[in-house]
Image 1 (tube, rainbow, N blue to C red):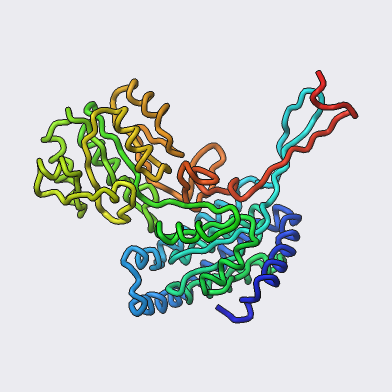
Image 2 (image 1 turned 180 degrees about the horizontal axis):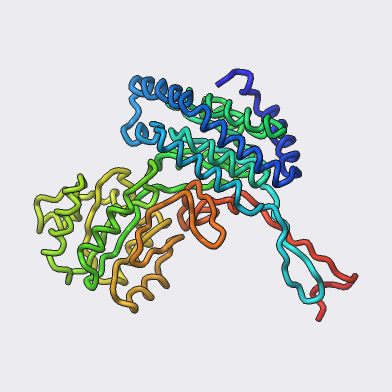
Length: 416
């Protein structure tokens, strides 16, 4: 990155906070214009960004970047086109800073959404995510402090140039987006004064940031989702749910990597599913009991049941019943997206009432999409576990604080 864009911690935070204050008071039209300009810049300079990314891919060979991170690092025209579509969708979403009426006993009031201030984003690979998060921050009036890894250095530099050009064209201070030092310890010093830190990457990377951060920190989660496959559900539905969950762009955030089955599930149905998964390039693993019965399976170690594979691998385990399955999932899954395949209404009720996951899927694929549905739709950067500061998807609402404005007649609003 341009050396002039990397400044000392105190100066960086002061510049961003002042620029973010200006952004927060800017009209929705101006903020949307910045996002629209960013979409146009990305479309116009897509090939230049791909060339910068190619340099990173070549350098990654010298850095011995793991294959999973290399897949996250590699940009494609299709991947950038998806980002452009999301930016266009962001422009047309309602203004998240608009006030909303509320009801009080003796007073009229409204909810006032306000920006958090400064969001710190430290990421491993994923050079397209700063584009998306920057647009989300502009939509919500937040400043953004970025820190990427060495493997994506050229891509990140070009992305920051795109962001600054878009802000300049919309007459919004470029200081709304700043770059932290490339050194992790220096970066953490800068991030110590932001209002929210979002790390993104492999589990050990996120955990390292979470342990060092001294401010509120999200912990986005990828993989290690569980499926309980009830006897009442057929093999084809289980196959469909698993395969669909592993579709990622590029990361399969809600990939089903662990499957629990009751003892009553017929062996023929298991082997049928395994054969279908192997045809799609999956490796099948099992607990000690399963491996003893089916020696062709790879043994899943004790630690694997609470760690993601981040590849096409699924481990199977027998549990006594649905109750034991729920207990196991609540203990070992990441708790962001867990599933049930069943034809029993009673089982679906029991599962939904007792599972602790941030999101629960009943006979539905948990496949993650950054373009979420709903009446008005939203955009998701990632998803967090039930133990996170904000469980569920990281959306525009995650980047906002709210306060109540109460208007009365001079009396306490608690009076009857």
